[in-house]
Length: 351
Length: 263
Image 1 (cartoon, rainbow over the protein chains, first blue to last red):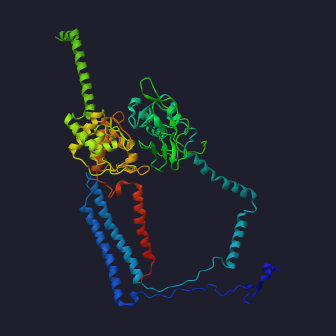
Image 2 (image 1 turned 135 degrees about the horizontal axis):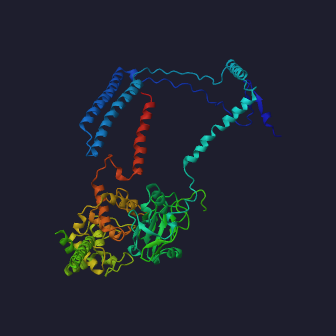
Image 3 (image 1 turned 135 degrees about the vertical axis):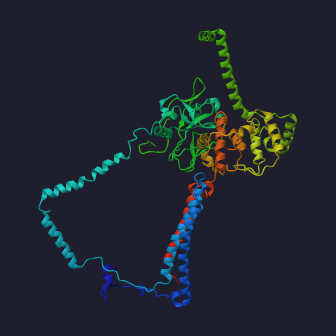
């Protein structure tokens, strides 16, 4: 017959619940209060020799401070800062700083050493008091609140109370409106780059000179910006460059595995977005023979000969390819924009 | 007086003289400009004896991997068309002959005298046209430091680090440090693209651009770190390690001492 839990509990002499132990052997191993550790007498309290030594040490530390402070004043004049030699500033600050450090450190360490070795070593214990107030204090608090309610008429004056609630609910709203100052809505600017203007020549970064197909040798790499980007004003130039930067290489067409890559290039010359699809670092560490493109930030590696697919690292999408053609004068041009948004994922981006 | 002068200026002969003068100035300027650009690629005229010496050295030291006629084998690429600059770079930095095969051939002490290197370079250059060794007069020029720094940061710094300290690449390869590289080696590396480095031919970075980059790198090499020890110019990794291990370690040590009881 099974016993119910409450049947197992019996009340012992102490008034606490004691449990029937069955066949288990229970020893009285309740951890007791260990009390305060026995006081250990310091060497400086036991021997006069040690006490004198500690006193000398403290005095020595304060002396170090004195020497440090004097040294820093001397160093300031001994190693002047010379305008024509930037390295002199380093010498000046390093010795000045060293002196000031010793000046402060000597005082601090000396004071702590003094307190630890020579000042009284008595141990004091203090009981914690209860956080709950006494009944008397609690009753008085309730009395004060009731009196305040009565005097102000807070419970009685409904109109005042309700308008106050309304005012309190509304006053944080202006702070939320201020969030719109965090920046203009990007709208669809993340989906388009400057290449979307169509027919822009590929030009060298930073000089903006156009590139002929015949300029691009096998194994060469060009860092490319769209035609006209160089002449934009500084903030919008950087914003456009951050999206439109392109890496142009020439591969042996026989090495290219993807037909689309060949079709969007010109005789082995292919152009890919330089903006990593992971978090947007410029991917530009190009290895000529392995055709690998490495991102310096998180080591995402893309295979330039195979649609820039990710072969290693945290990036989840290939780099977008920019379709290029050659115009009548032999210069490389991009007929249009990338087929997909460049750079890292963003909230509204599909896949 | 004045009238006569005007008339003489208007004579047909004067017009053709002015035309001739203008043509001479324009054409002469063009010729001067193009020779200045080409002067970097003038190959040292190698005589047949030097080429033959180079051929012998090639057969004895290089042909086992690069093929008897430098046509390349499975172990090593062809040297036809790589030019004298490639041979000079690879052999004078000790990369060739290769110490061992692997992801990347390391540099070491050069294994040949300057004369032998010049002979081998002349032989390889005689096989097919390729980039030539830059002339000393070109390398002695001073380029535009600011433009060089900008070009270096755009084209080179992602692998070689903004101060040329070098860095890691994929699969055991690395971009070497540029701290002890000579201007000639800078130029040769750019035009030939050794190992996995891409080629920066004169149609990408003009000789003037290359000179700007070389000027920038020499400035970096000769400019001491103003801010104290640069910790290898490795940037936040080395600096972070120093702060977290040495500085934080010292703070933890002081804190433990503060809390410990004196004995």
